[in-house]
Image 1 (cartoon, rainbow, N blue to C red):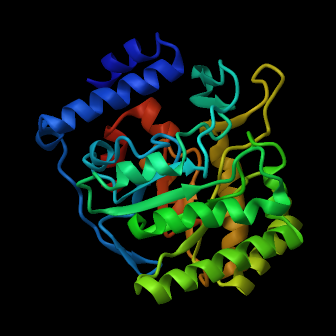
Image 2 (cartoon, rainbow, N blue to C red; image 1 turned 135 degrees about the horizontal axis):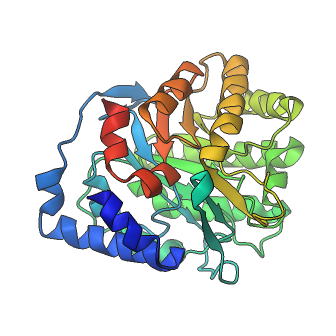
Length: 326
């Protein structure tokens, strides 16, 4: 059934197809259709002090503003991650900015953290019925200089922590100028130290521990990965998502972040290297290029404790969720 639907969706502009798919899923969940077709697979796993119904999650980016949490939560995922969310609304980069590379089973995006801002997201979070594991991916506004980035991340954390099972610090999107500089050295250490301080303050006030996860790039040299991992260990980060999209593209593909099958090998190599350094002291969420149950097994064998999909869902549809979990 999805193959038939996909043919129509792929005839549309990618952003229009994205919006139509989410609106249709929202309607299907509202009238109870998803309950008829989806039988959740429950295989609980304990990670970061949280009990996940199963190990497969939806990566951030599909629902940037928290508008479709209930609908996406009805598809059988063990967890949902929304965002990236910034303090103020921003339009993102000029259109067109989302492209399908069908021959490669890939997606190229240069969206630029387009979102409605944290105030809108909080309004949505106050209305949802979903009670599963919810990750909230946060970022900085593009006009905030890196030396002031901590202020943006803290502002969003303070407003969403009440609703989040965990919060992801996104410092690896390739579509915000100089954002990836936050992955290195003193900038990284100061950012994570400040966020851990904020986490502790929230815990003291609310008696709720909200794990902090960092989403990293797949385009890191082994030495850069080593330095990052040491800082993660020093600052007692709760989890790492390996990885975001890659900037390794050809002239034909153009600038932006590439996801999908071409990312599988690169992101899994980074996952494996990171796991060898962290030695199970920090759990890793494997993300990037998962298109089958075999791909999922490879991520787990490389050291992932949890998994996330996005592009695979676009190309394979909801059947991919069941295939991976089975």
